[in-house]
Length: 396
Image 1 (tube, rainbow, N blue to C red):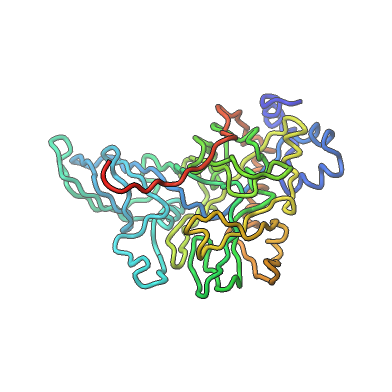
Image 2: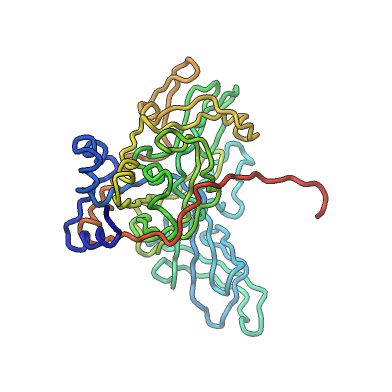
């Protein structure tokens, strides 16, 4: 019915009709799918939450004399230096050297890669310590200096796994509190925790990846980036509802963008007590309304998205596959749910308010003509499973 070229032409002329994934629900109900698909050009989706599989490549520039840095610390946090001379990759979950971690359980994890990335994007000054064994052409063996993001040649966020399509709901069936990446879980299933924007979340609005694919342009913490690959653990071969929405994790996206163009509001280091450090990110993805089928997928409601409830005291760590129940995001967002005959407090590790803000910001950028859409270079796999690690004894 429409093409990417036609939609982009409307964006450039300032005539594009853009609604958020929240707004399109009632709009399509009033207008009907066919009419709404003719009128609306783009639907914006968004999410904001912890995305542990994130990090960045940094280039510090060459010192005088030159140095091939083989060990790197940024504000005391190790960065991977097994790349070229003054390049490094900093992972969001890396701990500061000497951090006691969970030695004194539960650990506080006050500072790590996610916090360093937050400070970088915010323009703060950080400390660099580099070591080398020295070579004829790179003779320097040590460097200590300070820098900010303005001093770097490149600061490129390169995230292996973001934007999980649906996710677990965590509970704790044991007799003691446990500490997880979904927060502290009280004993005897007294509370539960989830992490998704539900009806605003990108891949839940494009469940079969008809428009979101490799090369799709995205809004990553305020910068214009793109999907560079399927995300790690992308596993779309799973149980789905009649609306094609998966009832478990399923798809993921690998994202990249220029950190120098990011907004610090949407890049936050996170300390997860008893678990580790992470990075909370804001992501927005536009969905071009090419036909009524694509539009219909964007009208998904929280009540139609089910998430699996998993016991993180036993079933999750031991990969039993046991699912206690499935709850809708409409139920989860009420702050209290009924689970196995009891009333359980519910809370979210992601921010729906921030996701709503991001979807609106992206919609405004498109209406102004500042954000054009891109056709995917390749589709994400729709049939692909997930295999676990095989533990083998002895040497190969």
